[in-house]
Length: 400
Image (cartoon, rainbow, N blue to C red):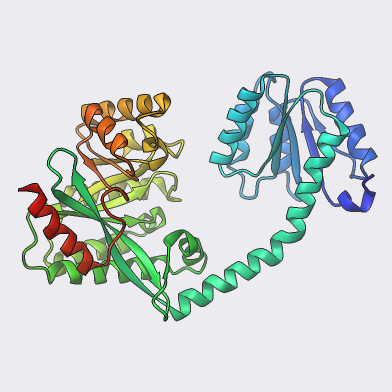
């Protein structure tokens, strides 16, 4: 039997158009020692409660079928809050639909505390609350410890550009490379970007980091006197950099000073991230294309703004996310999504690059669907520059 003090600091909001359901969840909360649950009969009321000045909601128990605003719209809108609460889905629909909605919530970056078919039981709510309470207890010291560890890595290590080859699926020739940052520790071990990029942003270091990687990569590329003219080099940019026109001008000037032809430099924008100033993003993107640089939308399919960004921004390249390339030869849904994406991109005049290719079966299907370029571990991981040059020489021999 749980004790009241286990949960007494967790504030629950229940949103359901059925009064009996709201009442039942409220009674369960009282029985488990929680504060009086906030009860809302529709999504509009719930959003207003969560966003009210001084309010605090830790967990929202949300129905899917509601008038005016259904549960899916509620999830999308609450994901836009700066610090959204955890979310528990409560519905009478089949488990497959609940699982799909739960995955959607996680894709929006929400903490999904579970999905339960009606009626909600005391045990089901208690299980959810215990998990949430444990997470709250562990989160603060864990986050602080992780941040301190990453700070130490950043301060004592150095950033180096690695190059992942992009190959023609028809000929096997290397057509380009994506520059990927690696944090090299004093002992030579590597730290991958997912472990440090967010922390760089929090510390306000993203601009300096980008300049550092760009300068090192450009120095390597311009020292390579036998570079084939068709090689294109891609560099990832944080969308926050587009908020500063001076930063974008500096990036373009660095390419020009290095002597790299503009049409051989592609700037990639991750489509799940959004610059704070959309007009500035559009202006910077248009200026890049006007001056002859390439512009790619990266990880296409992972963010909800994909089609809108394709319509608004002058991309000339689209990169299909690994999540959709995986198991193409056995997953009919992924095959349909990738095939439709390739057809759409070609109709818009975009070059298509498939990311994260790992099997010959995936290559076979990509060829059948009309994809021309791919990168992934099947061909090579991201390589130090010297190894990339050796890889390029080997592929030249194979392509002859």
